[in-house]
Each structure stands twice: as structure tokens, then as C-alpha cells.
Length: 294
Image (tube, rainbow, N blue to C red):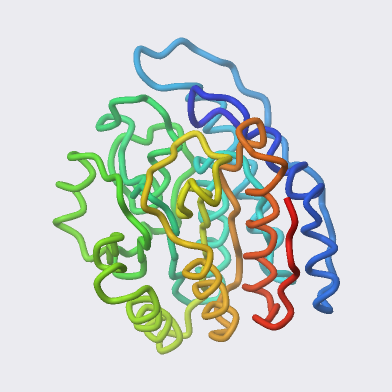
């Protein structure tokens, strides 16, 4: 999926993850891995819009991804290889449908430099990759998108690693119970404490947990392959700690890997790091990490 923004390149993300050895890394941990291939959107008719980029295509992708996510959830831990972050509108929607059938809450951990809480009306850029959490929480303006089973409750969302939030998003978030942890809070108190508290709440609620990992959660010095770089992101150590804590919790039931733009990468280092992080989330221990040479 590459229609959530103007800058192209995320279309190549899934094949970059494959080339970086995602399947092999997880198989080596004892997991049975099946690559279901690329999702494709249903038919859509592009129409000019005064502001929004590729609106009809994004709606078609959301519909297709929600169906694919819902179908995968009962029997597997699906990993959605993106693709820009607009794909989470569909993947989380599918997880929400599955959680509703299970009569269980869905918690969402949003690992991102940005809050992605815009609406089609509030976004200045017109890029819909900045709107998925606005859509999923039931904000206004998403005409034509699939109906939600119910809005995602604010107190079941943690945004971790924030460092670039637009004024309109900040104003909207201030009136919610969404937990927003920016990099200053992480610098002052560490990344483990707020995450542990969030995971404890999810466990106490018997929740499913969807994790949405954006490349720009990471510092661009270690993960340059993203079109929305913001300095001061998570270090390799902090990111692996997050993944290891997710594994220890046993709560994660679905995962997005988004915004990887291989066109901007350096000898595949970002794709390789993302694969290593997924491996940590699915059981690779500190002592088992491979040495990388670039």
C-alpha cells in the first residue's frame, strides 16, 4: 500500500522484508511461518479531491486489509508488512472485528514519532497515513470508509515514542484518555516503566493486543529508510527492549510493520533492523542476536 501519502516507495516494503529474511528469522525460532502474499484492494474509481491524496484507493485498501486481518486473526499471529501507515486503518479494524466476536477488548500499542490522529478535515497535508487512529477512534469525516463495530476506546491506546504532533492533533488528544508518551518522558524516566504499566492493564482486561510499528519510531541514524524522519527517536537498545517486553507479556496478537521505504535505505540496514526487532518480539533473546556487518 503506497497511497496514504505523496512520496512513493513503501510499495516495495513487503519484498524488502522478505529479502531481509523475515520468514527465516521467525522459522529459526521454531515458528511455523506462512507468507500469504500481497493483499490487493478491490476495484475503485479515482476521483479528484481538493485536498486528500488517493482517497478512493485508501478506502479500497482499508476494506481489503480489514477483511484479510479479520480472516487471519482466529488461527495465527498475523504480521502485516507495509506499506504506509494508512494500512493500519484496515489491519486494526479487522482486529477490532475479531475482538468483538471474542467479546474481548482490543488494546493498541502505537510505536511512532507521530500520533496519526488527524481526520480528513484536520489534515493539512492531505496524506491519509496521518489519519488511521482518527478513523479507528470514531472521529468525524471518514465518509465512505468501512463502518466500525464500535470506536476504539481511547483508554486502550498507547502512543509510544512521540516527537512530532501537529497542533490540531495535540488539541484533539488533550481531551481524550489516549496515553501519549513522548521522547522527553522516555529520556527522563525510561521506556520500560510506561510500557509495563500499559501491558499490565491489557493483561488485567484479558485483551488482545495489536502493535503498530512505524519505522520512524526509530532514530533515523539507525533506520534511515522512511520518508518522515524525525531526529531523536528510539535507539536500537530501547526498541529491542520494547520488543522483548512484548514477548515476555505474551499479549501481542497482531503486528504492523509500516513506512519502510527501501528506496531510502542504506544496503538494507533498516529492513534488517526491523526483522531483528520482530524476532525479538517473537522470542529471540539477547544472547541469540546475530552480529551484523554492513
